[in-house]
Structure formats: structure tokens, C-alpha cells
Length: 119
Image 1 (cartoon, rainbow, N blue to C red):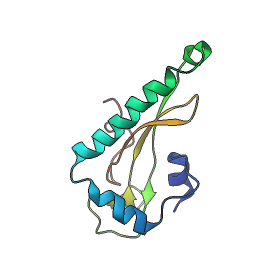
Image 2 (cartoon, one colour; image 1 turned 60 degrees about the horizontal axis):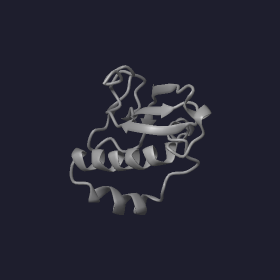
Image 3 (cartoon, rainbow, N blue to C red; image 1 turned 135 degrees about the horizontal axis):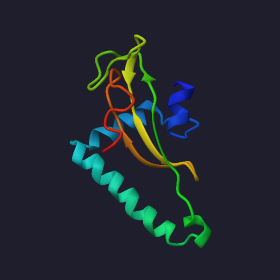
Image 4 (cartoon, one colour; image 1 turned 90 degrees about the horizontal axis):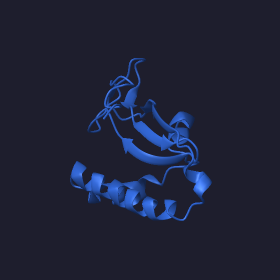
């Protein structure tokens, strides 16, 4: 696992592939993944309501894309990046103040950083 990918997810490690292999196939469509993210967002609102007033003085939203290379060139949605690596190019939206991940959009490796960022 590359350091850039782990940093983009604010993770020190990624679940064992057998765990991912068991969890990810449970989502049969992009809409189900969106529902999961919406659930996280609903819970987040409740947590934010418990914050002190100074928490709300300024919010800095960060959008960043990174190349997440992989050795498997036959996975769905994977593509070759500008520098010849097979992988994905996830777009990570975060609250920079707290490094909290707000949203993640997985894109194929050949997408430019700005694509889908405005939406």
C-alpha cells in the first residue's frame, strides 16, 4: 500500500484483503455506496451539534486527488495514469480543520485531478 494512498485516507493501514473481499461485494450499486456515505454524514451532523461554538467559526474544505496504484490491471474501473501506473485516482473531500473525511469519489487512474471536483 502506498504512503500517499494511506495519507489520503488518513489511515495507517487498510483492512486485510479477505475483510475487504467480504465487505465490498455486499454493495451491488453505486447508489448503495452513496447511501453508506449519506449515513456517515447523518451521524456527523449529530456529532457536530455537540461541538463548542468556536468549532463553527471557520471551516476549511479541502479537495485532493491522488494516484492509488495497484498491481492488478484487470480490476473494474482501473486505468493507467499519466505516469504509467495502473490504479485509481480517488478524489477525497475533507474538513481540513479536523482532517475529517467528508466524501470519497473513486475514479479510474487516467482521470485529471480536477474532474468531478466542482460537483
